[in-house]
Image (cartoon, rainbow, N blue to C red; front, side, top):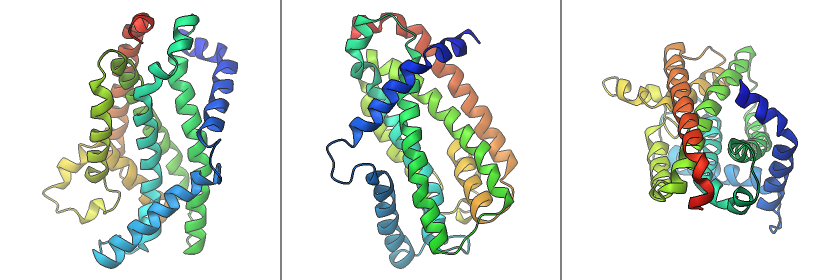
Length: 259
């Protein structure tokens, strides 16, 4: 509770640096913030051509583009945010040496800036759904708690990776590799329900499986998510958040000595 109070007390600091992060990311580009929408849409178009025309993966009776995008977009948010967390402490090395402040706010700043970018990228999802004349029903509201579970997992990984990579730089090399593997081990390009039933229990061990399948069920199929898979994702994410927070708070005392 005390930690939440300290984060709230630093809200102006968090908002200011988050705005700076968002502006700096696209400052020198011609399209600016349009890249937030253009990048995932471009990737979706290429992957749709490959996996619906060439490879022809099953897509639960849906057009492949919205089937793919409703999971691809949250994964890109997950991938970019978690991957960028490895450089947080080094990025703010000067600030860490000069000021005594509540250092978990650095993770919150990166998380908040990427979340704002993700919220703009959701415009791309709306465009795709409108193009295919797909209107989400009442069950789409379940996507909100599903997203909160994903955010919990992301924050836990961010706290853990940002702290450990400050001491052991190998984590900065392991994270991109692990995220690339996660992309193929998660039901993004393919349907969880198309996986042979004997392998599905192994795929469910990945907490993102229940999350991405949940987005599809609620937004595209207008039905409740698989609660058992989501419960596992929730418990797993909370455990990761606790481990990440404890690790960060234990290591942050000596950040100024290692950056």
